Length: 151
Image 1 (cartoon, rainbow, N blue to C red):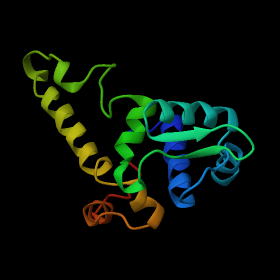
Image 2: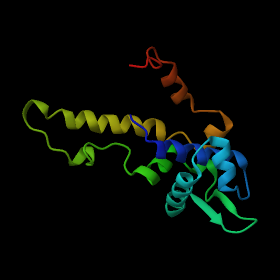
Image 3: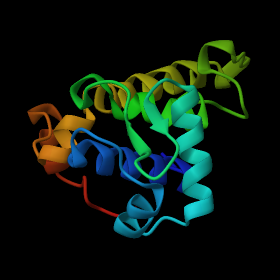
Image 4: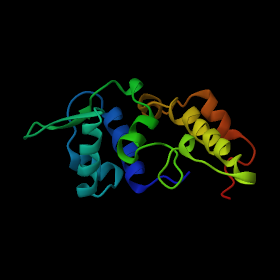
């Protein structure tokens, strides 16, 4: 899986908001804490706001906060908000692909890949990451032989 800078920054910004708890957090504070370029962060926060994941208020007492409890926002929700579907091939969803002949099984491989991504990204919430307590199923995957192999 290749995660774009935009998706990475969205995840980090949202975790920062989850860790901050209630009340608004200024974009510049998020930017400094996570070393995210502020102009890029503001666009990301706008995308998250349009997706209903973040709320904001302007002014001296303003800032950003999560629109739902962190336990109700998954990493998949955030990635989809800024990038669209979790898995696609040349901009198409796996179930829309049509392969012929010996390449036909590739569609099933790509559907399985998406299911695998969902198995992790739809089970990990912002609350999990902010608390440093990932689901055991995710920890087990990270402990598997070869999981940390950079290939």
